[in-house]
Image 1 (cartoon, rainbow, N blue to C red):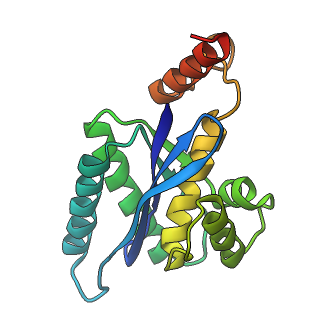
Image 2: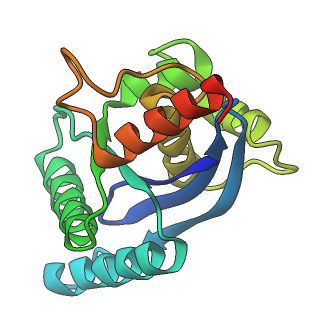
Length: 192
């Protein structure tokens, strides 16, 4: 049994999308990767529609168990933060319409999960994503690699290859996909 995660590196100019299947032994396999781009010359509503249509297509084509989105973080450039927040909202709403759980991860969480350092640069993330997924070539641009890193991070943090409690203190925050994953792992450990 594997967990399929759609990672989304939200952006209005470039939105990275990456689908990864992660097995119980934490072995990750890339299913698809891409970037949806819009031009700053287009009106905002047209740009958001391009991204929304692409997200709908990816969700309907790949049927992820969960969607992992990069959490908006403080930045000096307000227009960049606004675009990221707008795209994040589109992604979250599209997943919610389909009943797909959404998880948010900060850039430092993703860097730490993939490279071991929350301060790693984009090149280090791309290099390790390429190695983890056993790819012949690095995913480009960086937004694509970041989306794959988000998907890997979520699957690994959600309990792939590790025991996750399905009841008791602290488990109310588990998504239905996380609970199902943890229950399947527990059955496998019991030999069922």
